[in-house]
Image 1 (cartoon, helix red, strand yellow):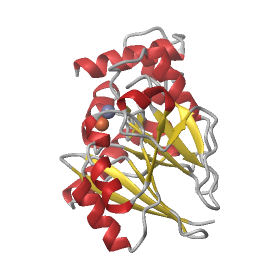
Image 2: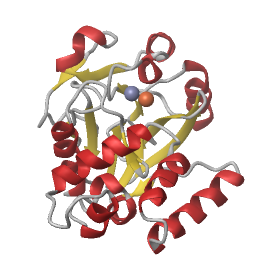
Image 3: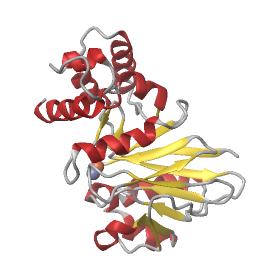
Length: 256
Ligand code: ZN
Ligand code: FE
């Protein structure tokens, strides 16, 4: 039941994710910021690419698709809702779809907010979620198209997964997201510990991703809307509901 995972740094701060199901030998790539680093990683892996799974339509997630398809013949999956602004799709997905990936079950989640047609891929057997620019390391995507309520609902889907789930998101934003989180709660021990670990990883040139959901649940301000301390830090009443806290946190991050 094992899935092997390779993190591929692209551009200034993007990640593509390459994974292979060892039982079937099938391989998939999540998002394609650039063709060159992806094709290089693919060659080094020795895997044959079967699928490209797209999370959303932004250029820094799809720019390399045509070149990688031309080089590999991989089939492209993406959101049916955004088929008009994604590269040509071989498989158009909606929430609840369970597309075939060898021995691995794949569940598709609609996670609007950053864009309205954003989707995520969850592999329950492998305990991995590919979240693109919805749930991000220590943060969440900016609301370019959707509402706070939409992103709040999207993040709730991830928060309900097993805490050991490995979160693979689209960008190396951990340090800047962490600075924002610490601006709200400068003395929070879990935040301080995470920042120290992230700074060490970055100083050594290592990605801070992937990250387990338990860490996000403990430290990500966009997942901690029911924590009265966070409500207080945002200037809200301690009984403020979780959506109000999320909305205030997102607005504060936009100004940060
Ligand atoms: Zn994006
Ligand atoms: Fe992005």
